[in-house]
View (spheres, rainbow, N blue to C red):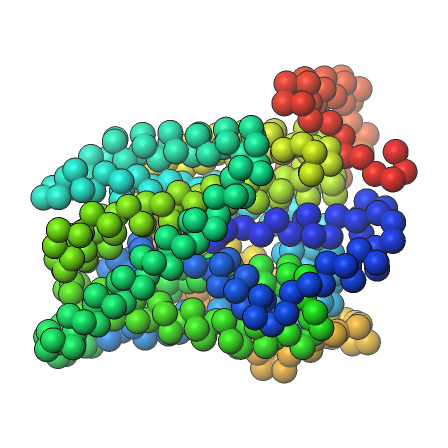
Length: 491
């Protein structure tokens, strides 16, 4: 999951799963968002810190300016196609849990469990680590302008930041949500400054970086696939668009319209930002930089260059905060469905913070800081996530065959999911020979969920001592973190 700020989707549909009353009335009351608000929400989800780190990963693999821009356009188109597929999934299977619910509905309990398993062990902690390292690199870069950032210092700052924001989310989640407007402003302002400064430099006649745009470009499919991983990381969030269905007026009309408007706009902004980067920095300069927006500002903004690392650092800090807050709800979904220990669940979300899951994910995020190479982490997480996104969209094709009369308020043309699945298959299988270690680790962690599923979920006749021990651990965690079993209207 990468850059993305994970949606707190489980919160949107909680009533449908826990026996809430008068659901139709509640839904009608919540439908206060029109098309304009829908577009704004989508932009808020997608815009993050990825655009300040991914350009280096893309240019590293493809090697040329022109091919780099092609990859960014292709990533935008892929995101748009994927978002349309998820619009059909989200309105056809209106259940909490996102991909978990779609995979469960189409393919059953084991693949759905493996999705949650990988989300908890790979997607979420890896994305936390990436955003923490991004913040650390941009904070520390001004102090080491002529040499690489100290690796230990970067990882230490990232670890302290992740722990601090986890504590803040445990202490008072309302305070963290209030900060998001400020952080959204910093993201947009940083992008606007980059685009204006870069194009001003370009219009002054500095076009040498674009003289032979495709010279030195790679034709290796494996490298191109890994480059797309880096690009798609910046677009992360498009597969959460369907979670806003309940909030929209006339959602079956406004949701696809919001997609048609917002994702081309995001693609345009990202391509313009990359043109600005490449107008000022050569591919060699981008590869030598640990924080390309800082290097860009140093070359172009002069005495005002200090503004850029500040804005990007605040952007990464805000993105990490909201990602920590919302991703913890995945544990709640798993606990509700019986696919994760109840100790990771919690009582009424509006009264208590999900402290056990926050602490659990915090520990795993710190483990991911064993490396400070964010591009390795992006490839590591994106491979497995792409596989499960492919599986979710494959569910459209399977359900079209298995349940042709299923209610589909939004029904996309058949070629859309077919094209998306084919591209995802390319992204999943082609890098196997190019980055075998990252792919192998992802496969190994995924397969480790199979025995966990059979032991933890399917095995009903567990020994009394095991059940008793698990109960004691659960009660201890509930007392320690002031959490409890989720309350329902039947309780």
